Image 1 (cartoon, rainbow, N blue to C red):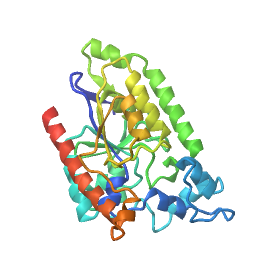
Image 2: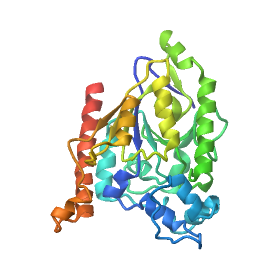
Image 3: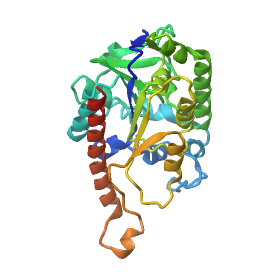
Image 4: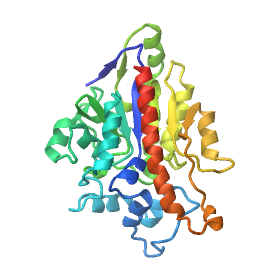
Length: 325
Protein backbone atom coordinates (compact mmCIF):
# COMPACT_ATOMS: atom_id res chain seq x y z
CA UNK A 1 0.00 0.00 0.00
CA UNK A 2 1.06 3.62 -0.47
CA UNK A 3 2.34 5.37 2.64
CA UNK A 4 1.04 8.92 3.06
CA UNK A 5 2.95 11.41 5.18
CA UNK A 6 2.06 14.91 6.31
CA UNK A 7 3.46 17.47 3.85
CA UNK A 8 4.78 19.57 6.73
CA UNK A 9 6.74 16.66 8.22
CA UNK A 10 9.91 15.27 6.73
CA UNK A 11 10.20 11.46 6.93
CA UNK A 12 12.62 10.42 9.64
CA UNK A 13 14.83 7.68 8.20
CA UNK A 14 17.53 5.49 9.73
CA UNK A 15 20.01 3.91 7.32
CA UNK A 16 21.68 1.10 9.24
CA UNK A 17 24.75 -0.81 8.09
CA UNK A 18 26.68 -3.80 9.37
CA UNK A 19 28.95 -1.94 11.80
CA UNK A 20 26.59 -1.98 14.78
CA UNK A 21 26.01 -5.71 14.31
CA UNK A 22 29.76 -6.36 14.26
CA UNK A 23 30.34 -4.29 17.40
CA UNK A 24 27.63 -5.91 19.53
CA UNK A 25 26.32 -8.91 17.64
CA UNK A 26 27.34 -12.18 16.09
CA UNK A 27 27.75 -11.41 12.42
CA UNK A 28 30.40 -11.77 9.75
CA UNK A 29 32.29 -8.80 8.37
CA UNK A 30 32.20 -8.05 4.65
CA UNK A 31 35.76 -9.33 4.31
CA UNK A 32 34.79 -12.59 6.00
CA UNK A 33 31.71 -12.88 3.79
CA UNK A 34 33.63 -12.59 0.53
CA UNK A 35 36.16 -15.13 1.79
CA UNK A 36 33.29 -17.55 2.44
CA UNK A 37 32.34 -17.17 -1.21
CA UNK A 38 35.89 -17.62 -2.53
CA UNK A 39 36.23 -20.43 -5.11
CA UNK A 40 38.83 -19.03 -7.52
CA UNK A 41 41.72 -21.51 -7.37
CA UNK A 42 43.96 -19.07 -9.25
CA UNK A 43 43.84 -16.56 -6.38
CA UNK A 44 44.99 -16.98 -2.79
CA UNK A 45 41.94 -16.91 -0.50
CA UNK A 46 43.81 -14.83 2.09
CA UNK A 47 45.01 -12.25 -0.43
CA UNK A 48 44.18 -8.70 0.59
CA UNK A 49 42.47 -6.70 -2.16
CA UNK A 50 43.55 -3.21 -1.19
CA UNK A 51 43.21 -1.43 -4.53
CA UNK A 52 39.97 -2.76 -5.96
CA UNK A 53 36.36 -1.87 -5.08
CA UNK A 54 34.42 -4.50 -3.13
CA UNK A 55 31.91 -5.23 -5.97
CA UNK A 56 34.82 -6.14 -8.24
CA UNK A 57 36.68 -8.12 -5.57
CA UNK A 58 33.71 -10.46 -5.23
CA UNK A 59 33.83 -11.08 -8.98
CA UNK A 60 37.44 -12.23 -8.76
CA UNK A 61 36.91 -14.40 -5.69
CA UNK A 62 33.91 -16.19 -7.24
CA UNK A 63 35.46 -16.30 -10.72
CA UNK A 64 32.38 -14.32 -11.85
CA UNK A 65 29.98 -16.82 -10.31
CA UNK A 66 28.44 -14.42 -7.80
CA UNK A 67 24.89 -15.77 -8.20
CA UNK A 68 25.90 -19.38 -7.55
CA UNK A 69 27.94 -18.54 -4.47
CA UNK A 70 25.19 -16.39 -2.98
CA UNK A 71 22.75 -19.28 -3.29
CA UNK A 72 25.26 -21.69 -1.74
CA UNK A 73 25.57 -19.63 1.44
CA UNK A 74 21.88 -18.73 1.73
CA UNK A 75 20.15 -22.05 1.12
CA UNK A 76 22.40 -24.04 3.45
CA UNK A 77 21.27 -25.06 6.94
CA UNK A 78 23.77 -22.57 8.33
CA UNK A 79 22.41 -19.60 6.39
CA UNK A 80 24.88 -16.80 7.06
CA UNK A 81 22.15 -14.16 7.22
CA UNK A 82 18.83 -15.73 8.07
CA UNK A 83 19.40 -17.78 11.22
CA UNK A 84 21.18 -15.33 13.49
CA UNK A 85 19.87 -14.66 17.00
CA UNK A 86 20.20 -11.15 18.35
CA UNK A 87 22.66 -10.92 21.24
CA UNK A 88 21.45 -9.08 24.38
CA UNK A 89 23.92 -6.23 23.76
CA UNK A 90 22.76 -5.76 20.17
CA UNK A 91 19.11 -6.08 21.18
CA UNK A 92 19.49 -3.20 23.62
CA UNK A 93 20.93 -0.87 20.97
CA UNK A 94 18.48 -1.82 18.24
CA UNK A 95 15.58 -1.39 20.64
CA UNK A 96 16.72 2.15 21.42
CA UNK A 97 16.87 3.01 17.72
CA UNK A 98 13.47 1.48 16.97
CA UNK A 99 11.94 3.33 19.94
CA UNK A 100 13.04 6.61 18.35
CA UNK A 101 9.97 6.26 16.14
CA UNK A 102 11.63 6.43 12.74
CA UNK A 103 9.15 6.41 9.87
CA UNK A 104 11.44 4.10 7.91
CA UNK A 105 14.48 1.99 8.68
CA UNK A 106 16.62 1.22 5.66
CA UNK A 107 19.33 -1.41 5.93
CA UNK A 108 22.03 -2.77 3.69
CA UNK A 109 22.11 -5.89 5.88
CA UNK A 110 20.67 -9.15 4.62
CA UNK A 111 19.67 -10.51 8.04
CA UNK A 112 16.56 -9.96 10.14
CA UNK A 113 17.86 -8.60 13.42
CA UNK A 114 15.81 -5.40 13.11
CA UNK A 115 12.60 -7.31 12.41
CA UNK A 116 13.19 -9.56 15.41
CA UNK A 117 13.68 -6.67 17.81
CA UNK A 118 10.68 -4.84 16.32
CA UNK A 119 8.45 -7.69 17.51
CA UNK A 120 10.24 -7.93 20.84
CA UNK A 121 12.19 -11.15 20.25
CA UNK A 122 15.78 -12.18 19.61
CA UNK A 123 14.90 -14.05 16.41
CA UNK A 124 12.07 -14.22 13.90
CA UNK A 125 10.57 -17.19 12.09
CA UNK A 126 9.48 -17.61 8.48
CA UNK A 127 5.79 -17.33 9.33
CA UNK A 128 6.22 -13.93 11.00
CA UNK A 129 8.35 -12.66 8.13
CA UNK A 130 5.77 -13.73 5.56
CA UNK A 131 3.00 -12.09 7.55
CA UNK A 132 4.96 -8.84 7.91
CA UNK A 133 6.04 -8.53 4.29
CA UNK A 134 4.27 -5.82 2.31
CA UNK A 135 4.66 -3.67 -0.78
CA UNK A 136 3.45 -0.31 -1.98
CA UNK A 137 0.61 -0.07 -4.50
CA UNK A 138 2.94 0.81 -7.34
CA UNK A 139 3.67 -2.92 -7.75
CA UNK A 140 1.17 -5.79 -7.81
CA UNK A 141 3.19 -8.09 -5.57
CA UNK A 142 6.35 -8.16 -3.50
CA UNK A 143 9.41 -7.93 -5.73
CA UNK A 144 11.72 -10.91 -6.13
CA UNK A 145 14.74 -8.65 -6.61
CA UNK A 146 15.61 -4.95 -6.60
CA UNK A 147 13.49 -4.12 -3.54
CA UNK A 148 12.41 -0.58 -4.38
CA UNK A 149 8.80 -1.06 -3.26
CA UNK A 150 8.92 -4.08 -0.93
CA UNK A 151 9.34 -3.85 2.82
CA UNK A 152 8.49 -5.40 6.18
CA UNK A 153 6.22 -3.69 8.67
CA UNK A 154 6.12 -4.60 12.36
CA UNK A 155 4.57 -2.47 15.10
CA UNK A 156 4.47 0.62 12.85
CA UNK A 157 8.11 0.18 11.86
CA UNK A 158 8.73 0.00 8.10
CA UNK A 159 11.94 -1.93 7.38
CA UNK A 160 13.45 -1.88 3.89
CA UNK A 161 16.26 -4.22 2.82
CA UNK A 162 17.63 -1.98 0.11
CA UNK A 163 20.29 -4.47 -1.05
CA UNK A 164 18.17 -7.59 -0.61
CA UNK A 165 17.52 -10.14 2.12
CA UNK A 166 19.07 -13.41 3.22
CA UNK A 167 16.06 -15.66 2.63
CA UNK A 168 15.82 -14.62 -1.01
CA UNK A 169 19.20 -15.06 -2.76
CA UNK A 170 17.79 -13.53 -5.97
CA UNK A 171 17.38 -10.22 -4.19
CA UNK A 172 20.94 -9.88 -2.85
CA UNK A 173 23.02 -7.16 -4.46
CA UNK A 174 26.66 -8.21 -4.73
CA UNK A 175 29.02 -7.65 -7.60
CA UNK A 176 29.66 -4.77 -9.96
CA UNK A 177 27.05 -5.87 -12.53
CA UNK A 178 24.26 -5.91 -9.94
CA UNK A 179 25.16 -2.56 -8.41
CA UNK A 180 25.02 -1.08 -11.91
CA UNK A 181 21.59 -2.59 -12.57
CA UNK A 182 20.33 -1.33 -9.23
CA UNK A 183 21.50 2.20 -9.96
CA UNK A 184 19.65 2.04 -13.30
CA UNK A 185 16.48 1.21 -11.35
CA UNK A 186 16.98 4.26 -9.13
CA UNK A 187 17.42 6.55 -12.12
CA UNK A 188 14.37 5.17 -13.93
CA UNK A 189 12.18 5.53 -10.84
CA UNK A 190 13.23 9.09 -10.05
CA UNK A 191 12.77 10.09 -13.70
CA UNK A 192 9.19 8.82 -13.41
CA UNK A 193 8.63 10.96 -10.31
CA UNK A 194 9.57 14.12 -12.18
CA UNK A 195 8.53 17.26 -10.28
CA UNK A 196 5.91 15.57 -8.08
CA UNK A 197 7.85 16.20 -4.85
CA UNK A 198 8.03 19.93 -5.51
CA UNK A 199 4.45 20.13 -6.83
CA UNK A 200 2.99 18.45 -3.76
CA UNK A 201 4.93 20.73 -1.42
CA UNK A 202 3.81 23.85 -3.26
CA UNK A 203 0.16 22.74 -3.17
CA UNK A 204 0.29 21.54 0.46
CA UNK A 205 -0.51 17.99 -0.60
CA UNK A 206 0.72 15.00 1.40
CA UNK A 207 3.69 13.22 -0.09
CA UNK A 208 3.20 9.58 -1.05
CA UNK A 209 5.95 7.06 -0.32
CA UNK A 210 5.82 4.59 -3.21
CA UNK A 211 9.41 3.52 -2.59
CA UNK A 212 12.11 3.85 0.03
CA UNK A 213 13.77 6.17 -2.47
CA UNK A 214 10.99 8.71 -1.87
CA UNK A 215 11.72 8.62 1.85
CA UNK A 216 15.46 8.96 1.19
CA UNK A 217 15.05 12.03 -1.05
CA UNK A 218 12.47 13.80 1.12
CA UNK A 219 13.52 12.83 4.62
CA UNK A 220 16.13 13.41 7.29
CA UNK A 221 18.59 10.52 6.97
CA UNK A 222 20.69 9.15 9.85
CA UNK A 223 23.48 6.88 8.57
CA UNK A 224 24.89 4.59 11.25
CA UNK A 225 27.16 1.55 11.01
CA UNK A 226 27.70 2.05 7.29
CA UNK A 227 31.21 3.01 6.22
CA UNK A 228 30.02 4.62 2.97
CA UNK A 229 32.90 2.99 1.14
CA UNK A 230 33.25 4.36 -2.39
CA UNK A 231 32.11 0.99 -3.71
CA UNK A 232 28.60 1.87 -2.48
CA UNK A 233 28.11 3.73 -5.75
CA UNK A 234 24.30 3.55 -5.62
CA UNK A 235 24.13 5.35 -2.27
CA UNK A 236 26.69 7.97 -3.28
CA UNK A 237 24.58 8.65 -6.37
CA UNK A 238 21.41 9.00 -4.29
CA UNK A 239 23.06 11.43 -1.87
CA UNK A 240 24.12 13.58 -4.82
CA UNK A 241 20.65 13.27 -6.37
CA UNK A 242 19.04 14.35 -3.10
CA UNK A 243 21.17 17.50 -3.08
CA UNK A 244 20.03 18.34 -6.63
CA UNK A 245 16.31 17.91 -5.92
CA UNK A 246 14.31 21.12 -6.43
CA UNK A 247 11.86 20.26 -3.65
CA UNK A 248 12.66 20.97 -0.01
CA UNK A 249 14.50 17.88 1.20
CA UNK A 250 15.75 16.77 4.58
CA UNK A 251 19.23 16.65 6.06
CA UNK A 252 21.72 13.77 6.10
CA UNK A 253 23.70 12.92 9.22
CA UNK A 254 26.62 10.52 8.86
CA UNK A 255 28.02 8.95 12.03
CA UNK A 256 31.60 7.65 12.09
CA UNK A 257 34.50 8.04 14.52
CA UNK A 258 37.43 10.20 13.51
CA UNK A 259 40.17 8.09 11.91
CA UNK A 260 42.91 10.67 12.68
CA UNK A 261 43.93 11.13 9.05
CA UNK A 262 45.06 14.64 8.22
CA UNK A 263 42.88 14.59 5.11
CA UNK A 264 39.93 12.25 4.75
CA UNK A 265 38.69 12.10 1.16
CA UNK A 266 35.39 10.47 2.08
CA UNK A 267 34.54 13.06 4.73
CA UNK A 268 35.38 15.92 2.41
CA UNK A 269 33.19 14.44 -0.33
CA UNK A 270 30.30 14.03 2.10
CA UNK A 271 30.63 17.66 3.08
CA UNK A 272 30.49 18.65 -0.60
CA UNK A 273 27.11 16.88 -0.70
CA UNK A 274 25.89 18.85 2.36
CA UNK A 275 26.12 15.84 4.69
CA UNK A 276 26.66 16.60 8.39
CA UNK A 277 29.43 14.40 9.77
CA UNK A 278 29.28 13.41 13.45
CA UNK A 279 32.27 11.71 15.13
CA UNK A 280 30.85 12.09 18.67
CA UNK A 281 34.31 13.27 19.81
CA UNK A 282 35.76 9.78 19.44
CA UNK A 283 38.92 9.10 17.45
CA UNK A 284 40.32 5.75 16.43
CA UNK A 285 43.95 4.81 17.01
CA UNK A 286 46.25 4.71 14.00
CA UNK A 287 48.09 1.51 13.19
CA UNK A 288 51.41 3.27 13.68
CA UNK A 289 50.50 4.25 17.26
CA UNK A 290 51.75 0.91 18.53
CA UNK A 291 55.26 1.81 17.33
CA UNK A 292 55.64 4.18 20.26
CA UNK A 293 53.47 2.01 22.51
CA UNK A 294 54.23 -1.62 21.62
CA UNK A 295 52.03 -2.86 24.45
CA UNK A 296 48.99 -1.33 22.73
CA UNK A 297 46.78 -3.75 20.81
CA UNK A 298 45.42 -1.38 18.17
CA UNK A 299 42.68 -3.69 16.90
CA UNK A 300 41.29 -4.45 20.36
CA UNK A 301 41.46 -0.80 21.39
CA UNK A 302 39.67 0.33 18.25
CA UNK A 303 36.98 -2.31 18.79
CA UNK A 304 36.44 -0.84 22.24
CA UNK A 305 36.36 2.68 20.79
CA UNK A 306 33.80 1.62 18.20
CA UNK A 307 31.52 0.31 20.93
CA UNK A 308 31.85 3.59 22.82
CA UNK A 309 31.20 5.47 19.62
CA UNK A 310 28.01 3.58 18.76
CA UNK A 311 26.55 4.23 22.20
CA UNK A 312 27.37 7.92 21.86
CA UNK A 313 25.96 8.02 18.32
CA UNK A 314 22.70 6.36 19.42
CA UNK A 315 22.34 8.94 22.21
CA UNK A 316 23.00 11.69 19.65
CA UNK A 317 20.30 10.31 17.36
CA UNK A 318 17.80 9.95 20.22
CA UNK A 319 18.36 13.58 21.24
CA UNK A 320 17.95 14.81 17.67
CA UNK A 321 14.70 12.88 17.34
CA UNK A 322 13.40 14.31 20.62
CA UNK A 323 14.17 17.83 19.43
CA UNK A 324 12.52 17.13 16.08
CA UNK A 325 9.35 15.76 17.59
